[in-house]
Image 1 (tube, helix red, strand yellow):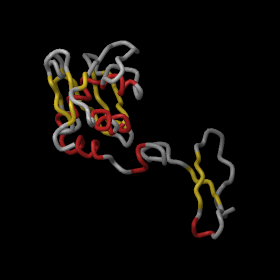
Image 2 (cartoon, one colour; image 1 turned 120 degrees about the vertical axis):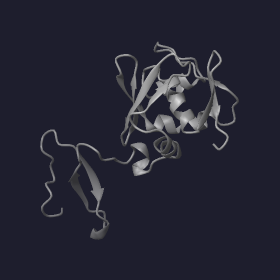
Image 3 (cartoon, helix red, strand yellow; image 1 turned 135 degrees about the vertical axis):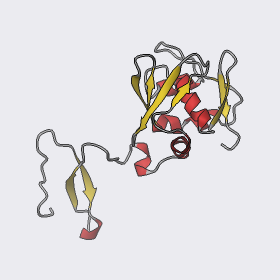
Image 4 (cartoon, helix red, strand yellow; image 1 turned 90 degrees about the vertical axis):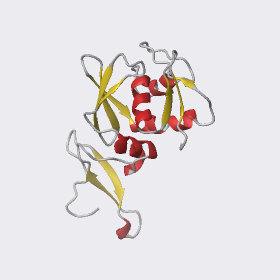
Length: 173
């Protein structure tokens, strides 16, 4: 075991194991995991922003207010974190983190299909095959309409705002 590294974590301290390639065989040491602002393997593709995330960050500024697909309401893109796109929704501006993983999977959901219903419903149930059903796998809230608007601004999708609202993959995706 390497010197200066405590092999047992203190109570409540999070750790992960890391192999030391400079030590010949597979000598494993424990290293302290930072509490905030770091990424770990398995979360959001190990430090690489995906294509959708890059498009959103380039076209939507944190603090920007956008209209819902119907145009009757507005919401705010609050910020971006390593793991999520954070939206402020409704009159109370509910803090709503949308996982980048869920957002990155949307082009695959839409690829090869024509128009797909947004299908936001304010219940735990969702209609299979809708954008709402996909996003509820990551967060049990009706977020599909708001996410669709962010994706449209980034050029990832097109929205048909006639009722019921639908999305399809953008031309360059």
